[in-house]
Image 1: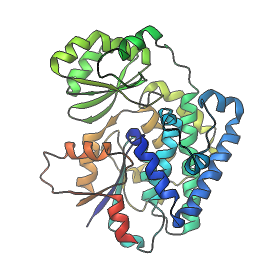
Image 2: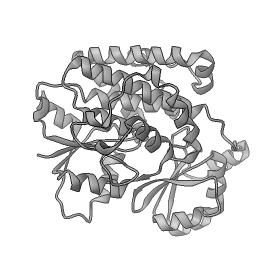
Image 3: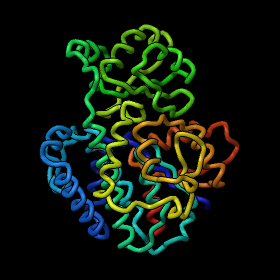
Image 4: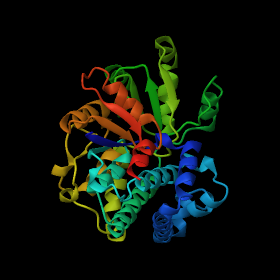
Length: 362
């Protein structure tokens, strides 16, 4: 079957992600991969230095110690930790297998930070040494992109009173953050409501009725309270995401520029000519095999540009003639959004988990 590998974004940052990481870490066949991961993370922490580490990470980050002992799940509210864990989990599933190139994979698509795992998948590395080198540079790119994003100062800090007022609302258990999801509004309706809020942007259009806003936490709270009654009347659901920086917004453009200075440390990254199968963009219907710079694509599409998931997903599945979508997780969001976006499509597409897919490959 013509198969597309699908990678989720930071929607998988919960205790399910921790369980998935621990399960992969316990497998003997993944020993060399996790040794590479731990070495890379040690190198990244040394590279950024203690001062930066203390600024962007509110605790000592040691993935190996956490997997060997107690994993503080609350740490996943920091997008550096969450993004690293998501990427480590996704790339682990891409290690070379005896099945090789006969697995039917003809394309890859990644939601938000999952784009970089899709790029790794698109290279189709078949030698272990080649794969581990790619995994190391890819993890450095992801980690430093997240670090540089966190080094930006937030223009407006939310007042404790406003945060307390929000948390006092029934059913509002998640702490306010720089990103919020709205379910039950069209793209046009949300764009109209945001007009006049210059510091807010529609950063993800995940499906016809699920959108995400990015900006400062204070601006998002202002917007929420200004529209709270209208949301309730229209039965629009509002939820702050667990992200700690406003992905997919122009606010992070300086971070994308800063990462260019880190490329010598990050090391060699594949060019578009290294992609053996199409990897599809999420900002517009296009194939990244025609890109001039995959690193810049990652920085722009994850940090700066908004996601337009429906046209991206429809194009990927139609262009590559996809019959089966393999959900590489770790969360269910990308699969759910893709299903919703394909409901009106006559093309029959089968969905299955990466665990099902991998069992047949072994």
